[in-house]
Length: 151
Image 1 (cartoon, rainbow, N blue to C red):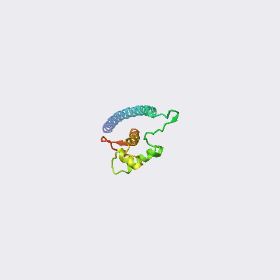
Image 2: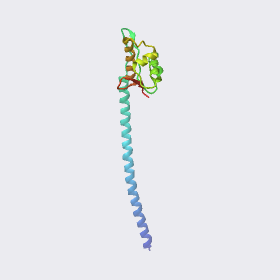
Image 3: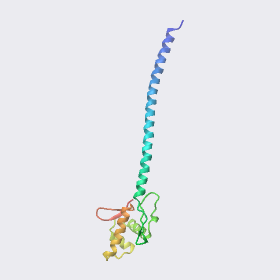
Image 4: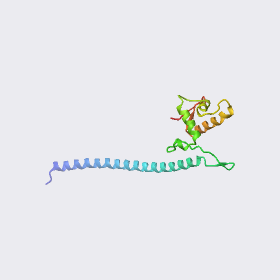
């Protein structure tokens, strides 16, 4: 004959294991759902990264010519693009801005790089270069018209 106490213990243990199994099944379902969500997020991220790369490539200025002459292009500041990718005069402008004690006006940069600042017509091309460096991410222009390095 079977011992009723042992039978009761077996039944209680079986109930405990059934409860544990139920919890594990629930956890497994949650883990699988989260894994599916992560896989979906990864696919979206890959697609968005590809689209952004295409948009950035399309937004970059294409090398061009004006009146049959090559036009000097200023690259956008990006990781991996060093200042030495810039033409020499632009490198001198950035160095002048960096050497200043703080934000500088175009006139102050002109003094450092050797532009005749007494003649407005000679200062305007320098101001244009400063603005171009701002547009390409190499410098920053403050609301008061002064220029500073981005970092």
